[in-house]
Length: 203
Image 1 (cartoon, rainbow, N blue to C red):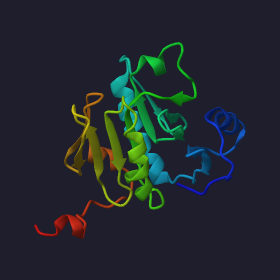
Image 2 (image 1 turned 135 degrees about the vertical axis):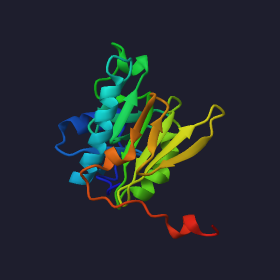
Image 3 (image 1 turned 180 degrees about the horizontal axis):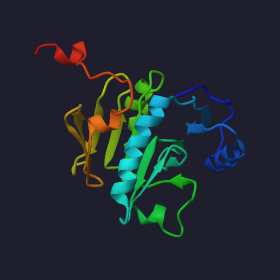
Image 4 (image 1 turned 60 degrees about the vertical axis):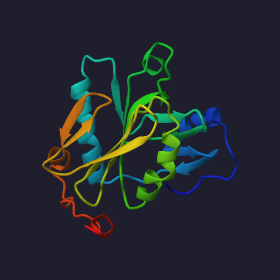
């Protein structure tokens, strides 16, 4: 997640002004700015593969995908994040009154994990993202093994977990797309998935 830039809390409007003037990207969490760490080639490749698949699939549809530099504003908390990939199909984002810098009503959010962000992306960030009423799926792309994890909102508001590995399809029902996990990781050196001890215990 990075370290806070300053202890003085800022409003969302102040954050936007500061971010436009900054050469670095920051996330706004609980009123504080957190500088984002630089990305790796593997991280970029994984995010790019999914963005390319979504962009092609959504062509001609009333949904739009964005990569890396578009912010997602969680109105309920005031927090603002830069997901690796975001898809919105909401007229409030896409219509003439939408904000060119911010998405507020996403359907699908994708985060590529890293050693420094994995715990936060799986925990507190997901807790905040769940406050987005339009969000249907939250996707985590593993950095240490070839695995794509889809968390999908049920009609009753609960969330179900759908992991997929090479030889399987990762399905994004929110936009009607299935992608081959092997193609997501193609060209990277990420090893095949091996179950962790906790997952095999008792089996």
